[in-house]
View (spheres, rainbow, N blue to C red):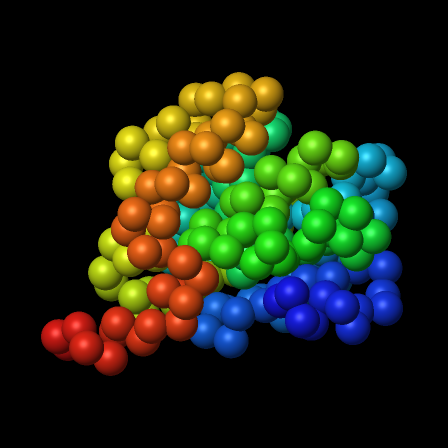
Length: 190
């Protein structure tokens, strides 16, 4: 992502994962959300679903995520596979960069920097379905304590959270970006 961003010359940039399902309307909906949003909205976020939004359970998940996005306006509630940015704002925030953050959870840390200078918008009709290939996420995920602390801390303490608290814990667990390249699902039973 860091290398690719250096070559982007469009107003918007979206990073898509090869193992994530994006509906055919995905990019069109991103453009519509940006067009309808105020100028200070520089990122558009998709809701992650386990299946297309046709069941009551899936719709309830969308409603919960949208409700959370209105309460926790200064937090990232989606992974990098569901983030779309105004290119200039992403660059102004430092982009995806190992210089800024060489660890897992990079999508949340980069959003922390973006949210210092612009707002984010979630949209009910913007969704995607991530792969379930990685059954064991322990080498690439945060702990329950880390996730809860991220959720309750005010935005003013997020620098401390990422750069003093979380980074030390990720170093101790050897959760750098290379951990994301390990294909643990090839070793998992089933």
